[in-house]
Length: 348
Image (cartoon, rainbow, N blue to C red; front, side, top):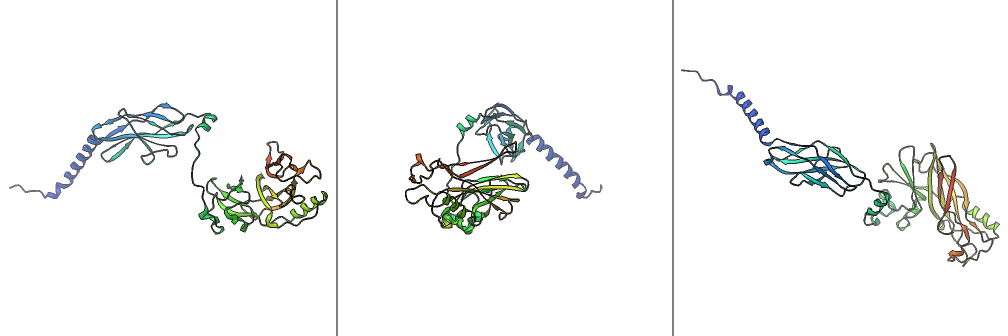
């Protein structure tokens, strides 16, 4: 009588055979290869692509292309378009002059099989065509829910007017603005409010750079009025306007902000032209120190070609008293190192 071997001795051999058999069956039955896509047509807003697949085609449930301008290895989690029976498709509504990463794929046996990546670039449009095809974004411009002064950390770009932006040494963009906010809640924090950002999208609110009306403004105003034969005045400090600063980096460690302060009242009483504006200057060696702006005083004011004829009515724009206004400065440093201040605006 032959002696039987224990069953467990055959088990490893059985497992090896089974594993090989199953793996081989998977390869024979489900294996598919997708070719790298070829781009056949290119326009400013579309790319036509084609590919092919080999293997057990009966197992393929779906085929198409996935693509992205950002992901260098796109998947079906990015943009996807189905392929037709010839394994071709058009990728549409693309951005002109932009490179896209594209892969073909098939879906079979509950899994995706991808091709290698191909990169293709849409054609560029002329500026006229870009403008012709531009569609402005639409959204509800309503930030009343965060308008309170206590929520200023959430303002981001809310309450920004006449912005001026500079790239500083620390890699941040710094922005300064006209005094304005929903409900005038900004008055709690001074003037010429600042923000900073690394990406020009998300902005950290920093607060006012000028805490109070500069000490030179009222004395300078009355000095000029005296020269014009006008009486001295003492306006309410809360009635002055703070408009349109412009900020520039002059060099490492030196930043300049020219600003406008509009004086309240009229030159010589009712039915006369409005009071003048001043352009002043502040400097800072590091804009990350929002309290580090040092006022350098008066730069320039309005100029008139009417002499002492102050009786120009405030709505007589064709004959306004000032030949040059003194708001909205723009500070230009030329490649040759010349410094120019362009200003005026609103009237004259």
